[in-house]
Length: 377
Image 1 (cartoon, one colour):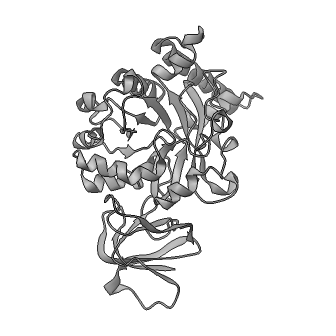
Image 2: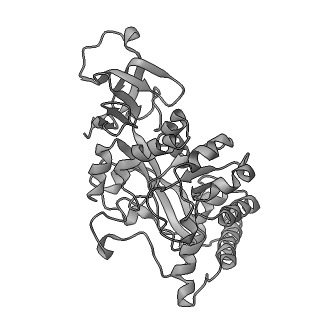
Image 3: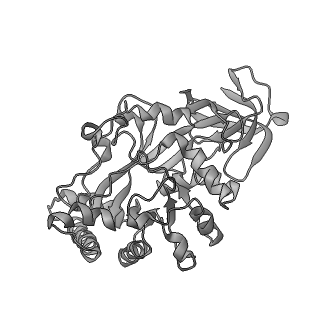
């Protein structure tokens, strides 16, 4: 298959005003300028002057595990019975027939991070999932891709208001440290050959070994800095999810090694810690040398509107290229799958979205979407 006659944005610093991309057996085999394209006799799709991009990505969603149009029946992301549940796997609660999935695909989204909710200070294992398939086993790109942690009002509300720990931010941090230290000691015993097994500790080993990052739900500046403090103490990789008030400490965060996953920024604040939510935040972080991703936090905001949220960030000061990367290659890095998706490069998965116009224009539609080289729209 070859996609032709489109403005090709690779997300690796290359732009072709009249470009093409070719793929076979689910992998990208060639791309470039139409003027340099070799003769081709296979199937083609004409972008007709539209835009060709890697499939869009959101690193933090609850799609498939917080199902659209359902009440408690489809809410499977918060296990509010124990504040420390790293052994939970979102793939065990994911429904490939969530009606939000085809809508997201129609918007050009091909891969997402599916995460547990933020009721627990350690919520469970995040998976990178492609939005094509009838069973989650066939849709998983990487699992686990990260571990979900949470600080701030949500754990306090879910447990503290019922006279259970954590009632305070101090206890939230203490519970995380305790779980990580237990897992560290458990890992040391395993490495010595001792016959031990603990599901919670076992799940945290990839975090301690820096094989996957911690994704920490935090809105307030003090919660973000607590998350960074814990990450330093245990030498962990970290992404800050939401980062709602991060603009207030952008100068403090400058130079720190983490990915802010910013959003959602639309609508009135849902709670006190979210009052400073703004589409300007991602651009401010960029100007301080950080590289943010943009999230809808679906089902908080609809995933299919991801390019519109990126467009709003541009309107409020973010550079266009940074915003495009924030919904492609940067979320791929946050999930540790940048070797497979997030940009157009030879050998990467043929996950490609074709748009009728610039993806940030309100009149633009996705005219074709491919996942693993198969057309899904």
